[in-house]
Image (cartoon, rainbow, N blue to C red; front, side, top):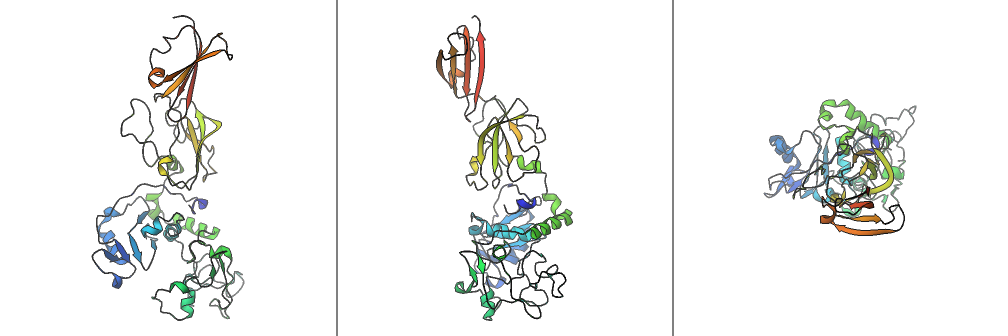
Length: 410
């Protein structure tokens, strides 16, 4: 997620359905809504106010209609909710999803007010310049440049009506998608006298600009500060959805196997997508799994499993047995590895009995393979002849438990 760099993290809590066909398609404006399966944004807002069961008070809410007309998504600062159409929500790049979330955290469009001389931002970044207004005009973030609406700039130059959709051939007219650069020889701000825009590739790539989908994914330090300040200044709004870092280490679904027969409907613990996890071997013998604050276990050098933040097969983001993990997006957590899961209660699926024929550890051995029945036989050791043995038990998750015994007589 683009917000992790600013210590803003998210935990998936699940989904549900709105039992209504009325919002299959949502239009931007009331007058455009037609048919029984269509509605407008304002009507949908009224519906949510009248049906609070579709708004979780302890979470950020994404409402996902099948499609939208006139917009791809909408974010609401004071309501902790967004509307994003299904195509944009399923886009692996997540640009619209993240853009609307930026609005939830009080980020404005980088071009806010660009057509209104009372609100538009001037190019200069010199606080001593009488034209300087970047701290209280436009998006009110100084390290984002003054800029136009890249999507509609050419249409406005041609005096097209504000509510008219800009034709495809005129959208992003002055952007180069190949290298995410901007060039318009007639692009000027609203200062007196007008100053030519000074727009870098970083500005074109900003998440809160109306830019090409392949370009707009970044945030600036100033935008990060603005989000953090907004969260801190709105405790009543954000307290219900705020949690501790330790909660990120808890599965959002499923459970850990502890002991006893494995239920037929057992589901392993699944972890939050969108993070990179590094699992290393750990031990020994603590309550399973260890609490976030319990770091008295030992972490070994062996990497048991790595899960990248781009993983889309969510069922694979599980906690291997005999391993602790760290979240790579949380580099400041000390110690880094938490939640050792070191459980030997689950029955092995097979194994090997190794007899050292000279009763010393050397290569003169006899190996006997055992299936799950043989290795779990409660009389396994009792039935062995006298001698020195190593018993290896193989577990479903790839772990191997080794036990050395010396049996003197039967």
